[in-house]
Image 1 (cartoon, rainbow, N blue to C red):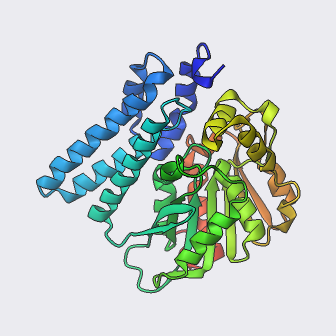
Image 2: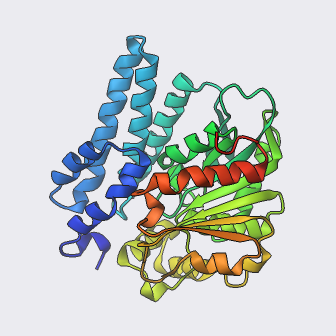
Length: 354
């Protein structure tokens, strides 16, 4: 049975993604209206896409009227809603790919209007945006922000804004199997090669001090951040938020296995990917300070949590919020400011706590 065909699956999925949606910046009342009108999860992509499309249309009207700030805000919102339309392992892969491209395009237009200094950064295995703090007059450290299994660079605006406010540049990326690259590249467990490619690209930007680089990954991206820190010597700090230490395929929820199967191109490839998501032999090789951020209520079957990573890595700190859920969208003030300060301190901005 596919995830979408399970009986009574819609209500727990809507509830389970509520704090994630709020943490990503979706309006909570709009989320309630949209999800309240669903007949089944098969309707989710079109319903969320419709909100994104309406925001794009509003942005075009604002831009035509010379209201650039309003247009930019609407486009940022559109990018979030368009991305959220792609969360499910829906059989219409073409629609998901189109929505991911639309989210990417909306974010591009938002930055053109409100942050023209943002730079598109791309390589063979990633696509993203490099943003620098406002008024930065000299090269600043940079953090690569890595999404997870079904997330994308459009989801983590709050994380990027917190780092920018502390004098740290941000390069938010989609890698293989993520966002705008989900249809073109299968996920890869050796994500250190992706982060290495990003760092190669950042080294050529005069406003960025790539010798002071960090990585922050969320959900499966937390594993990506940790494995990158174990293999990429240019990283000076790493953060894993709600990241797995290892996966056990047979215990994983159907949502995860179905999503992996679709993004990896088949069940056998998905099983192999899950088998390789394992830090047991790698954690001891992490050569930079590591912050592991965990929610105390985040308990996913088949997933060994990041607490094991904090115990195994040589220089790790565990920040556990007892009431936090997966991605800690229900308690952002309890972890995000401290995490941004921790990175700013480790990368030497002198702006921690600003």
